[in-house]
Image (cartoon, rainbow, N blue to C red; front, side):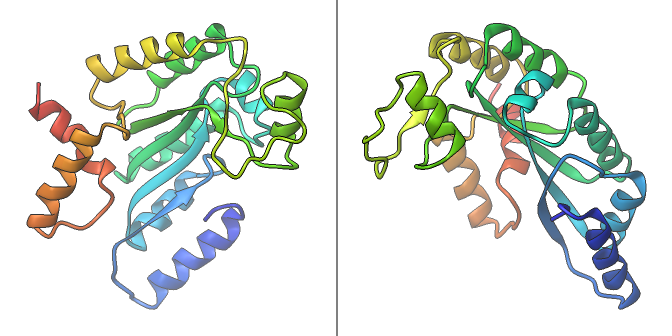
Length: 215
């Protein structure tokens, strides 16, 4: 929503000026979320923000060709916190150039992000005629003529799935804000509970609550 922050700020101000009252949320780039913008979003009715952070390692953000840094992610989160806007970060582990060192950097920096949830996924789906497909071909992950209709995922050869899984398990087991959204049992429990109670909103908002209740 904020690929052009000026446009989003203008939209929020229009909602405020017209006196419109409705709850909403959006998927945001974790960049240029200033205190002014966060305040306007809150006043316009924003309840939750989903941030496409992808990594908390600057090395990996550069590898992913992202136009922002972890420092900007942190600043964005702090602006949202000041307005008490619920948030989460989607990150990708194991992409091109991921190593145990960059993964550990992501986990360390995650500790600096307060009052937010983190939803990690492993690997990146390979699509034809993309930079990732070129990397996968060069590294022998796929062949040039390999059909990619069936989902095929890339994992950096400089890290193992076992290492990623072990580090994620540590966070899933010992923290409430790291959410395994592939945990079918937890997801089903949250969905069915709030469906019966007719509670609206993204399920990730409540998954950490159920994690704490299950301990």
